[in-house]
Every structure is written in structure tokens, then in C-alpha cells.
Length: 412
Image (tube, rainbow, N blue to C red; front, side, top):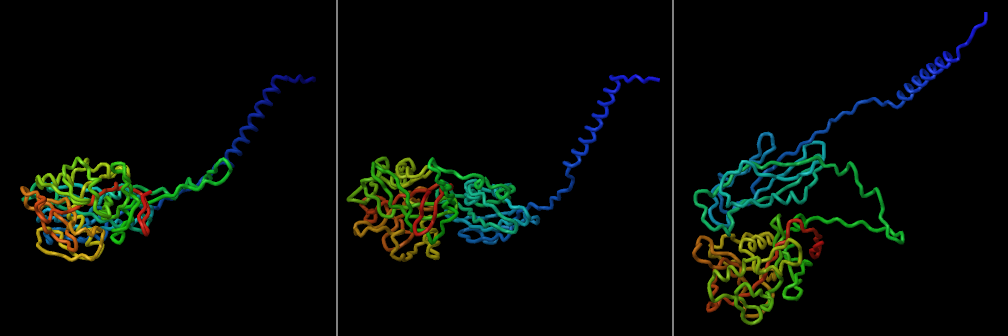
């Protein structure tokens, strides 16, 4: 019997077999690429407050002024009670501790549920926003902040001279160690030479301490076409760095817009009123040329009394009274940061831009007298012998100013 083979059927069978072989091969291939397993996320992510304390209390109720950490350690409850006068204030210190296992970056320390007078000033918290400090697991960072009744407050805080709020930490995971793009390439110039990486710098407010007050700084302003580059560091309030001219300002560089009068080479005064003198010293727009040395800087014609005292107290670990009402003289050493360098006997000192506290109708101005530091108040009228005073302008650098601190301070 002759069997006839149907080629069409054979072709179909071969195709079926081929598909089966491919299917089995794909299954084997797929299986070899399949990776199974488990990943365990056991890290903890937690920052908390620890070691809250009051560092300094000037003029606030000592029993009612407190800094307490909540039971869950996520909130610092701050209460400042009964600030007694302009210039009164309290300085606090607290640690932010990473009690978890994941590195974290602090984005902000934010007051919540604030009650009290909105004229009361809280400073020192915003420095963390600029620096975003990374806190490794088990590490901590410390912040100092102040609450004060500003000297420039226009009215007396009679019944509402207290403030209360809760302080909370805003933070995110720090991913800085997961990938560092700086090692992924090397820049070269057209000759093939390696181009060095740009150096990184920290903010000046995070570096400058009291020992650095009086150091020269490479700040340079152009005033009336003349370079003014003789500045020293006066104070760091943890939010801004303040510079002071290292000697009395020549009257040739006094802004004409101040309305102040001059005599000789350095003496500045007003024979109109104390109000004219005070406006001339304080008004920022008058001194804009002195602020053109760095973007975001602000200049005025003189420091305020409280800044001057704080700078001196921190630098020499003294306790000169921050209340200018106290009739008390404190001897200075021969420090030109605070006294100026002129030997001209007709100059008794330089002006500070502070009104006399408690006397809102009397726009009296303080004067730093040669060879003593005190709370004496001097008339601004030229006929008064104590009016033979000079000016030493102040520049406030922004929080974000970067630089280095060594024998001198360098702005980068």
C-alpha cells in the first residue's frame, strides 16, 4: 500500500514543533534572568530636641522665663515673660540630635502657636535655613537664638511684654552619600591640563566667633569714586556679620544727604536737633555707597549701643551693663576696634545710633568717649563740648556671605 505524504500537513507539524521549542527556550532563558529576594528597610528617621537651657537673661522674669522640651522631644516650648525695658532679652541654647540611623538635613526650625506681642524680636533661627546642616546618625548640632525687646521699638510694651511659642524641626533625609557626581568626570582645558575643582566655602556667620572681632576683612566699597577698604569685624549675631570702619570717617566721604555738618577733617555734628543727627546716622539710603562692596549688604552711619556692648562683652568675657540708663563707667583697654585710632584731641569719640530708652520724646544719642565705655548721653548740638565726635560707618553682610576665617577674614 502506498502512503501518500501530505507536504502541507508535514509543514504544519514542523511549525508546531518549532514553536514548542522556542517556547521552551524562552522559558529557560526567562528563568535564568529572574532574581528573587527580599530587601529589609530597618532604618529609623528621627531628630529630637535635647539639652535646652537659658544662656543669658537680661531684664526678663527669671522664674517665668523657661525653655522646656515636650515629652516626645519634638517640640521646644519657649516662654519669655515680662521683658522690662528696650534692650532686654534672653538667649537660649538647644541641641538638635539625630537619634535615628539615617542622616538628616535640617530645613528649618519653626515657631508654632505664637502668642504675645509681635514687636518682640526672635533672631538666630533662620541661619539653619541657609546652612542646611547635615546631622549624621548619633550626631547633633547646637543652635543659639535670642528673644528681645528691640531698642528701636517705638512704643513701650506695657501689658504685652511676653511671648510664648513651640519650636519644631523641619528636616529631610540627607542623600549626600548615595551619589557624589564630583568623581564622575574630570574637566580639562584645551591643552589637556586638569582644571582644578572650584573650592567650596562656608558662611561667615557659621565661622566667626568672638576671638575674630577686630580682624581685618577684605570688604571694599567705592564711595565718591574712592576705594574704602579699611574694615574690621565688629559682631556676629548668628544671622548677620557686622563690619565697622577701622578709623574715623574723613568728612570728605560723609554723604551729603545726611544733612549733618562737619568741622576739621573728621568731626560730624548737627546744630539743628538730635532728630536730624539720628536720621543721618540710621537712614540706610544715605549710606548706600558704603554697601556697594557686596551684593545684599546694608550700611548705616553708626552701630547701635547694644551691639557695641555685646561685641565687647563677648570678645573680653566681661559684663559691661547693657542698660544705658545705668550711670556707670567701665574702663576699656587700648583697643582701636572700640576706640578708633585718632590722636586728635578735638575728637572725644564717635556716635552710636541709639535713642535714650524710656524717653521717646527726647531723641538723645549715645557717644563712645575716648578711653572709657559708658552709658553717658551727649547733646548733639555743636555748642556742647561733647559734640566734637566723629563717625564710623557700619556694614551688615547678608546671612549667605561665604568666606574663610584665619588671621584675617576673607569674603569669597
